[in-house]
Amino acid sequence: MSSIRLLVLGAVRQHGRAHGYQVRNDLEYWGAHEWSNAKPGSIYHALKQMAKQGVLLAHEVAPSTVGGPPRTEYELTDAGREEYFRLLREALASYDQKMDVLSAALGFMADLPRAEAVALLRDRLDKLAGWRASATEYYTPEEGPGQLGHIGEIMNMWVHSADAEAEWTRGLIARIEGGAYVFAGEGEPFVGVLAEGEGNPFATGERDPGDDL
Image 1 (cartoon, helix red, strand yellow):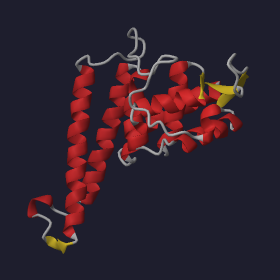
Image 2 (image 1 turned 90 degrees about the vertical axis):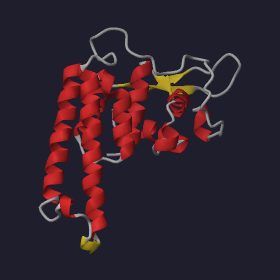
Image 3 (image 1 turned 90 degrees about the horizontal axis):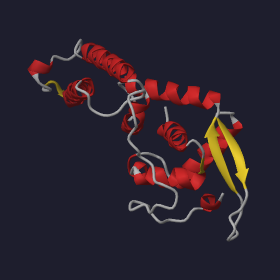
Image 4 (image 1 turned 180 degrees about the horizontal axis):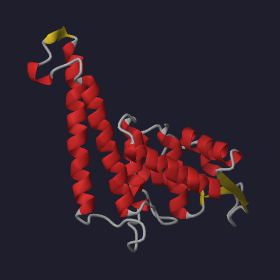
């Protein structure tokens, strides 16, 4: 899974309706340009592609009174909402996604009910345990990596990574079960988007041809 699709759908959903530059601004505000492939060209391409696929609905908006070309605003269609939640659930439950995909899912996990988020993370834990068990069929961690020569360091890294991922996941589950954060249906959600006209302290400031579309 590519993180860009989940990030763009989630950003548009938080506004209800947003033009491309708003989506770019939000993603830069979250630092997504640093930890994912959410660069301006990728964002604008994703918006156009998903509009063609019927996942987003494109609205051409009149130019502002100060001039400039019309902007295109996007909103999720029913298919887009279904796609967004499918990607979100898949990313939370998977153990073998790239870090940017999991990071995107964490940024949107509160769009789910609390119990469902916990269930998906528990599913992730089960998958991590299964993967670790399959790896240790051929490698005994207690005997150290030297049992397989320097190649054993590969298995050693995999097992340590699985253990660290499981520990982190258990900690996240405990925090959520302990009442951390506001999940769907529990009240006013955390506002993670910039208001119209609000300055972005984390913006790159680099111009892109898509900024005006």
